[in-house]
Amino acid sequence: MTSGSPPAASPWFVRPHSADHPARLFCFPYSGSGASAFSAWPAALDDVQVCPVQFPGRENRLAEPHYGTYENLAADLIGPLSPLLDRPFALFGHCAGALPAYETAVRLAERGLPRPACLFVSGQPAPHDAASDRMLTMTESELRAELESVIRGRGIEPRPDMIDLGMAVLLRDLAAARAYRRTEPVAVGCPIVVLHWRDDPDVSVDQLDGWRAYADSVDLLVVDGGHHDFMNAPDELRKSLTSWR
Image (cartoon, rainbow, N blue to C red; front, side, top):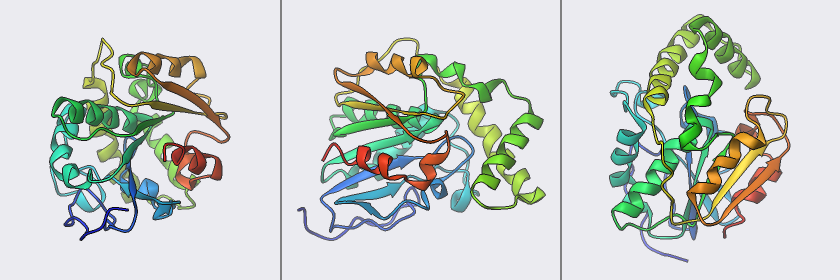
C-alpha cells in the first residue's frame, strides 16, 4: 500500500482523496449530469477508492465556463489528475462520459504518464460511432421530458427551475457531443471492459462492438438493469469494477 499525505483538494474532484487505498477509480458522468451521478456509490469498492470527476459548468462548478469539447476537457483534466496517479487506477465513464474518459486515457499515453489498468465504458458506442447517440437528434421538449424522467427516477420531484438549470447544462454538453469526431480508432494501452445494460432499449450489444478496435484486450459484459441503473452501484457492477485489481 502506498503511504503519505493525500493530494491537495481540486475542484475536479468532489471527494477528498485518501492515501489509505492502494488503488483509485475515476468516474466520468454522462451528459447533463455531474459528479452527483455517483453520490449513491460507496467511497470505496473493496480496496479501490471511488473518485467521481466534476466537470466545469455544473453543480458546484456552475459558475465556471463550460469545457467546450471533450478534447479540451481531457486536456484540462490531465494536470489535476497527474498527482493522483501514484498508485494503480482505472477510468469509468457512463454513456457520453465514456468519451472524455477515453480521451483522457489517450492523452495520458501521449504524455508518457501512467496509464490506467483498465478503461470501463458503460452504455456508450465507440468514439467513431458516437454520432449515433439518440439524444443528439431529440428536440428541446423531448430532452426536457427525458431530464424530468431521469430526475424522478432518482426519487426527486423536479421543479421547473431545476429543469431549466439542468437543460442549460445538458444543451451545452450535447453541443460538445455533436462536435466530437474520431473517424479512426486510436488504441489505448490498457484493457477495455465494455458494459451493456440488459434492459437498455437505446444501446444494443452490436452498437458496443466497435470498441474492439480500441485495445488489444476488450471484454463485453452484460449486466442487469436499465441505462441509468449504474447510479445505484448494483452488486454486479461493483464486482466488474474491481476485476482489474
